[in-house]
Image 1 (cartoon, rainbow, N blue to C red):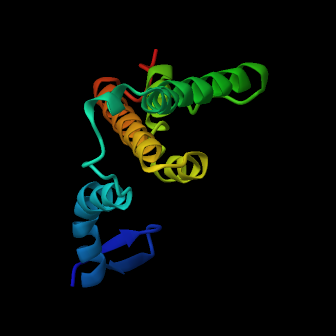
Image 2: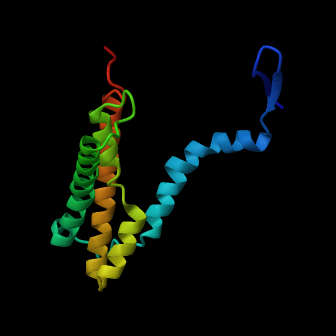
Length: 161
């Protein structure tokens, strides 16, 4: 069992231990979060690929959902936050850049579960439901990829003067 000593003050030392189960959880977390969970979410959409054709990619439903998840959410979140920060005493976390904040706003377009729930309540018929699911998947993936790329390229903190 691993342990180390943490010094609270110059006179008191505490022995902190990590159980084998906690080590296993820490080891498996990236695999579960980045592989198992996305596969589970994708398979849970139950898209019938037999019924999807090339025209479904450009249907008004698919394009509208992609645009709303990718463009609408980022504009709504970043603009409302900017207005709130402008007209109140609230401020961005010290050192957080607006470009990093914008990238986080793009990541908010990952609207998988609730978007599917609302879409299933809104549309009837297998063709319309598949177009909706396709739009949610494309919009969420686009938001995830663009947000991740921007966060990897931009520093999270402003340069200090």
